[in-house]
Length: 388
Ligand SMILES: Cc1cc2nc3c(=O)[nH]c(=O)nc-3n(C[C@H](O)[C@H](O)[C@H](O)COP(=O)(O)O)c2cc1C
Image (tube, rainbow, N blue to C red):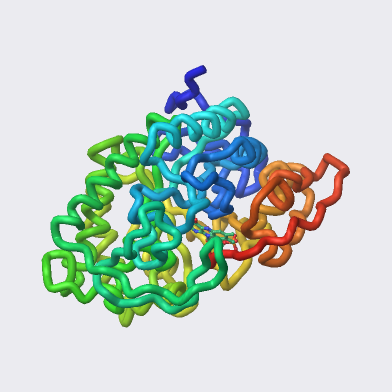
């Protein structure tokens, strides 16, 4: 069955008065509420990066979100973060994703694919081709790196040539086309949390002397070209960009984020993307600085240093600092985040990192809904975990 979304037919229930339960028009995609499921790597693909049946069930259970943003999906082999990270570069992967998106649509939901190129944040052991990690410059990330065989020292990445940078931009566009073929409603470009796009934006990791480095106008160029190429490929109304200015995750260094991100927003606004997904940071209060500079839809996230709660999510949207709020860890433990808000039921508390990654169904698809009357089982031990 074909399950692509019609951009005007997913109208929703009437607002109930709760700030998170009112509808929102996302560039023609009607969202029934304001809660986005944040992208979360959960490592349930197979060793060829092919989504598994468990993933169909996981995403189907969470279709009550206004929009699901999938876990980070590598746009090409060089960008693969881990052997169990899903891809979109083979027809087998596309076909398997179609089952995931079909299940979400059948359950009444909407889902974007997050395109996540890891850049330096990988290891030859984690790449299917065993290749050296690539990055804007040969600046090594702090270790250790998690592989299926345990923790290992990081490898100094190889700087992409100018021609390779152009090809990587094109790979994002190709992956976006594949995402649409796979039934996704759009794509989010991962420009946050220390991955490749962020590595280009940050002065600590981008020491390039060509047009993709140097001053702010050079460092933002890769991000702008990726947004542009993906928008050309699938339509700007289907493209979101995630950024996390000032985030030091993965050893990132940004001496003065404000001018970089203000320039980035000014450059991508005319392209008319569906949304900007902004992760806040106490070291650079991105929401306060950038919200007034972005007139389109803004998805806010508190960042990993502060866990999202029902109260903080509500306050973020009610205050107008964001149009939508993305919720991460609570979605691991509550498949029915939105349904709980509507029923006036508290979210189940988040638990430790043992639940973040792993294999198999436990801690993944066996989390009870508020009306299910079941209890959470402890997940099977996980040999190694990744940093997100
Ligand atoms: C297990 C796990 C995996 C994550 N994977 C990703 C990812 O693939 N892409 C991404 O942009 N952010 C990722 N994040 C960050 C989340 O999207 C989110 O920003 C973070 O968890 C803070 O929101 P929260 O307090 O609601 O959890 C991950 C977070 C966790 C806990």
